[in-house]
Image (cartoon, rainbow, N blue to C red; front, side, top):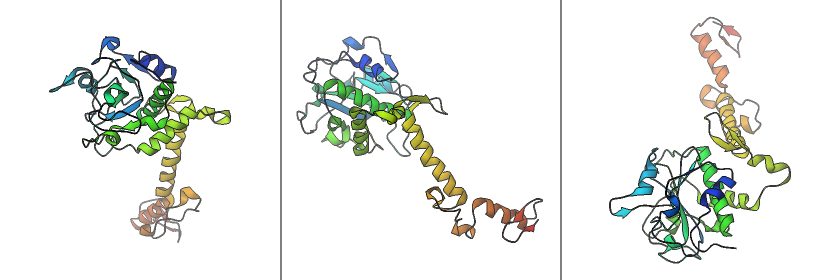
Length: 267
C-alpha cells in the first residue's frame, strides 16, 4: 500500500488516531505544487517555541516562502493542518529509499513547536502526539517506522532538528504503535488528562510516575530506595535519610519537638 499525490486525508487520519486537530483555512489549496509518491515523515522543530510559530510555517520567512511544512504540532499535542501540497521543509539530503535532495516531493513534514535548545521544552503530551501522529501517517501510506526520520538524519546541510529527541527510541515507540497493542495491554493506549490538563496516554503517565516517584523516594531515603533498598540514607548526611537528618538538625538547634532518632535526644 502507498499513496500517490497529495495527502488530502491529513486531518481525518490524525483525528482517527484520537488526536486534536485544527484545520487552517485554505489548507486544501495551499502548497508549492503536488506531491509525487509519499514515502515517509520528516520530523522537525520550529526553533521558536512560542504560540505563534505556526505563522512562520504557514507564511514563510525572508527568502523562503511558505508553507514550510504540512503540519505544526503544538506543545499541548494539537496538530495544525497547514497545507496539503508540497512544502519547503526538507532541503538537501538523503535517506535510504528516498530521492536524494528531493524529499519535499515525497515526505510529510511535521514542525513541532520547540526552541530546540537545552533544557528541552518538549511536553509529555507533545511527544505522545508526535509519535501517534507519525504512526497514523505511516500506517496510511503503508510505511514502517524506518521512514520516520529526523531532519538532522536526512540533511546534508547540518540541520539539528528535532533536537533533544532520541530518534532510535522514538522510532521504536512509533513501530510499537504501528504493530498495535492487544489483550490486557490495550489500556496503556487510552487517553487521560494529566495534572497540567494535557491529554496523554496511560502508558506515558505510568512511565512518568515510575520515574519521578522513584526519584522522590531516593532523594528522601537514600540512593537505591526506589530499587528495593531499605532506606539506606545518604553518606553526605551521615548515612541518614532526609527525615533523620532533619531530626538531628532540629535537635541540635533546640527546635521544640525535634529529636535525634539515633540518641532520642530531644530539643
